[in-house]
Image 1 (cartoon, rainbow, N blue to C red):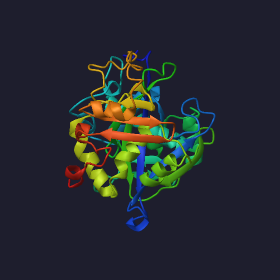
Image 2 (spheres, rainbow, N blue to C red):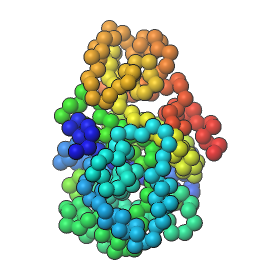
Image 3 (tube, rainbow, N blue to C red):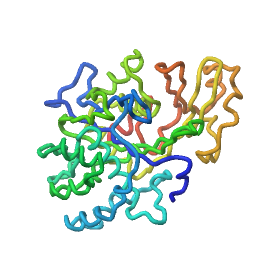
Image 4 (tube, helix red, strand yellow):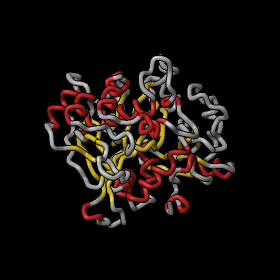
Length: 357
């Protein structure tokens, strides 16, 4: 049993970006789009919400069959070490426990790749040519049959790569962030590792019928605007990550940032909630209200402590801000007056040093 397994489940998600045709810029200046989809009412977690492809960790993601595949493909140990050697903060989901067959930086990536294929039929494979930092989406096989077989458990995901003589793109799947469901959601909590992958062109998508109502390729700005207008709903992690991306209009810059920030690790984000007189605040690491030595389990006993103050009054009292102010489902304001954690993109766009990488 993994540590904290009784408190939350491990999951993984992948933010897939794709370059616009001919590298064209849209009306907002973006040369790329983001792949998202709307969950159906059938799904047990976040029904009807817009999400990135992803889902729960499965035992096959930690199978030694992957080591056999890597061996058959003569992938040298040092190549795998470039994936597993990470500095900086390490969330629980990446910590190897007794009984784990694979390094968690590998198995959690395999989970993200599998879910992306199961839900949307997008199979990300390693680039066999010069390492550009971009993934490849393989489509010239019976995607629908394999998708159903993997989704329904008739075949293992590893068998697909083996049959196609392909390698899962561990190297082009960049560790991006980790989000944990707040503690007051006691019935169902997740620790989700978000990765980022970039494609040089928009690829075909085959949505799985049970989980996916519709999918879309859209710019970060269009998705955020649709959320603000009430056309769709983004959960706080998706909204935060799209805000980060929205300030960078060039997909090549995003890939450079993703490659460069690996050495910084990842600080887990578990929002801690406070009620205010005019809304709700989710505070994040670095904020003055964020509990010191937070264990990601204990409820916030001070949730109603500042209920007579407005969100603006609470912000004016703080020296260090890293929070999201919520008024209803579709109105959020991100506040962050410090540097972005772990060498990452800043949610408010203070990315000048990073964008010059």
